[in-house]
Image (cartoon, rainbow, N blue to C red; front, side, top):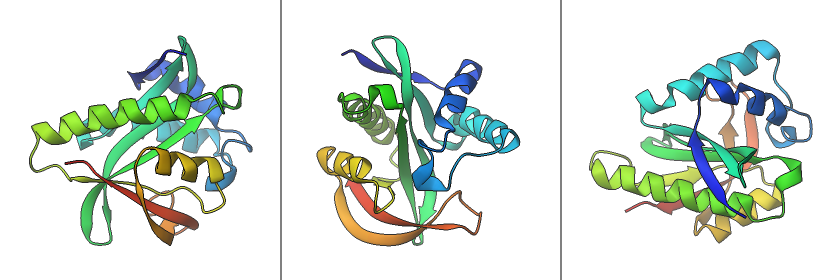
Length: 169
């Protein structure tokens, strides 16, 4: 299967809507309202100006999910954070692993070109999200254990997540 990443654009709003289902959002608090979904789409479009990138994941040319990296503060330090979604019809087929590897290649190039960029990537899958936790391990992340992770950022809502980290340099 050919998996590639495409930078997020206006045309990916329909993909975001396909991801916004009870099944796909069960580990992060459930689907969002249309208003919140449109705000999320705008944030995704603005990520490059903030040192991040949201990608649509394409598998054999079909939209299969999304993956991103962006900067955030975590425990007093600036880090990169990553998150991903793979639509049900593409799960279990290596799409997330291929997308993760492609995103890491792009992010490492970005970090290598900018010595001031954070040198660590974190991911925060829910403790009970076995596929995402397994993906972190397969991508070479190190587990730092469970944590209370605020999602969305500045929402006051905390998820029971695992903190995984990976050196980028």
